[in-house]
Length: 439
Image (cartoon, rainbow, N blue to C red; front, side, top):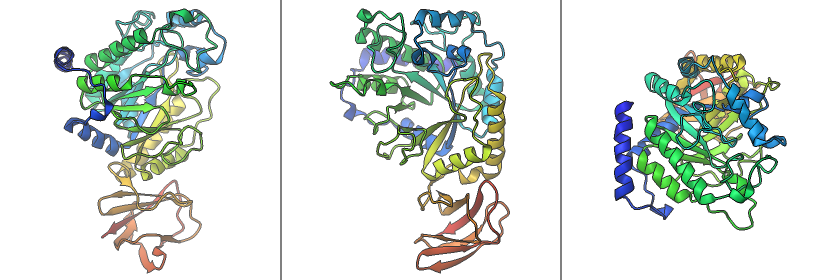
């Protein structure tokens, strides 16, 4: 990692000197490394999201500073007591790897302004402002490299506590801000310097996951976030690094993945994902319980069956699932979240072949389940079927059909509606999988 860091720093210096800023996003052409990274991202299908910061001290979720009339300076005092003595990067990454996830997305700075790495741009960070004095991001990055897990970094475009950020529709309840100090130019410079740190000091970063553009979606005059220049800077520093933005809009030029919040692509049950589905790699982020950040009373965890079916359904849309956990203030991932991840990992160990490296199936999601495809193999994931027969609206020829778990032959019959599967039993369990070899 040290050699990688030195090389990136040298590249960054030379690029700043030699490369003119790209001001027209249409000029962005993904590099071969970026296109390869996109494919690897699409094949991975499953990642774990980590929302963790000093907000965990209040056990009220990551929006605590915004949701109550709190003085930002009083809120900041929590940092002086933040001592996550049970944080162990090896334990985290090992548990996440055992879940079958291929990457981690870690919140480096959320809307409350606190940085979870040793940034030089502000002393309001986990090393300088807490008694813990450890750079958890550095430890996490080093462990991810050891265990071959990709590291993605969440970064907030908005800041409820930093005076320079021009307030949008959120953060207005926060007490103690000096509104006359709002200065977008200074804040934009601050962000880019922080992003440069993240992309030069922490090894290979799989993606930058932006959030917060929606904060100014009610402005009468569209706000200029200067994304073009920021995206260009990221791609200069690490060409293979993917950019995603949780703005709830169709992707902007310069973005490499499309994000959907709390919904699979094409659905909008949560009211945050009405945008059109693009041809970029897709990702759905979802909570394991109700909140993103740790909330003491939020024990409403989704069942293992629900989470596995969510993963499979997302894969059936050709998308990844980014499943969130909110670590406790002591640095431990909640026991129930660990149990759910372990259960998912057990299932993926047996059935991951029907998820990893697949594309969207031939048949859109149905009441009975979904399909995924890998080459000439079509996997039929049956969640809910009360009979032994299932007609699939397929036009392709089926050469062979069998149950995935035990390879027992399944009879097929061509009909006017497509292909009828004549099963050996009424499907039971979390996901009854039938594999079809097609032509």
